[in-house]
Image 1 (cartoon, helix red, strand yellow):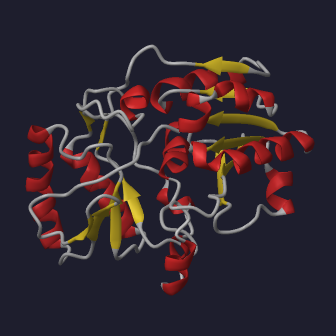
Image 2 (cartoon, rainbow, N blue to C red):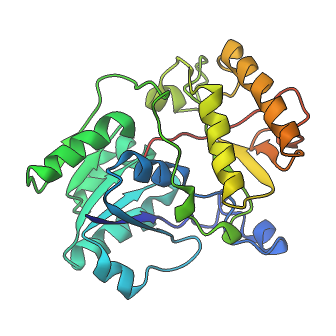
Image 3 (tube, rainbow, N blue to C red):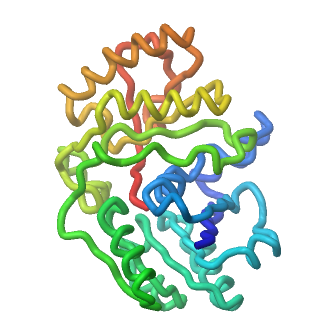
Length: 275
């Protein structure tokens, strides 16, 4: 199966950062962590290409190559996400969608002509999508009735990214938040229990970024990085040792607290890896 992963455009808004990015000669602030995690969860014998439309357009060769198109994004990206579904269908492609926007407003995505909806968190619903495709089913909606553990989530396929285009790389240690802030939909999407990876998992992801040549800022995308204080302390103990071994190559940052050194005792973050 040849899979084209498409990440929609951000309109000019807080999320686009176009003026700030121009100053540092970058095209996008953050990579599509959800989609490269999807590529890691789906069968590894499948072939994958990723196009972040905040960086460049999809080529004719890529459209012709694809057998399945997968799109994901947030509500702020809805206009281009729906446009890409329509374009893929115009070209006769099967299309699957998931992530925060499709999970929150599935009816809008269905109306655009999507074939498959893998809603909620991909660790549980992507295997259902794969089974349906292998059975020859041409459509379907796949939902989860529980929240998955993230201790089995594989290392994202960072090699699919165009590193030079991004100001930051992204990693995720936990999902969920114990609080009930009325302005935030995190507890609806990911629940109030903070589910964490193991320290070894997170450091494995950082090690992969290091192997691929990334040097610089790493954005921690957790909904609430210190939501599970016990586990984050265990991570920071291991992270302190790893960063010393790497001569403090990376800097961590998040949207709420800005940039801070690896030598710092606390790391903070935001986002989610719903596909």
